[in-house]
Length: 194
Image (tube, rainbow, N blue to C red; front, side):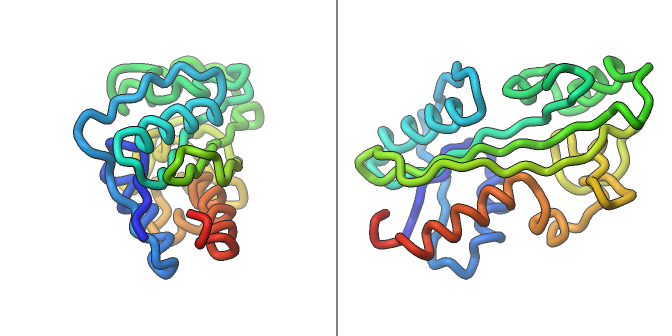
């Protein structure tokens, strides 16, 4: 069974296919022309916008996630604007570290949030849930794995950043993985509905 993953990021498709490899589902990229306008006020709203766009383009079941980093000391910013916080991944990290430069580690709590929405081929919502991964923002980037804000996110219970974890370790604890595990449970119980 194929489900369109409402993203233009091939790395995200690889990551999700790696986690769901035993499910009998293959996630595929949407066709050219996929360019949803993410103007929702929450991660959930943006995920739904993306899922609807992919569904409309393909007529296939679609899965979308919207995720980002929420920093307590910045009142939840960058939040839904995580990808638009600055022009490049490095610029986003630099901007965040600059905004937190006078904040001690004890007050640098943060969480990665991932909202996931699955639509059937008719565009009806089958599943919607959140995954969260808690940690703190480090003072400098460390690690070569992962992407986005991973190099500055200390995972709770670990003394390393998300970018210092192996792909397998990350796939067990990431916000996307937590949301995906909930989705996997749903698909195992209901895959005839998709």
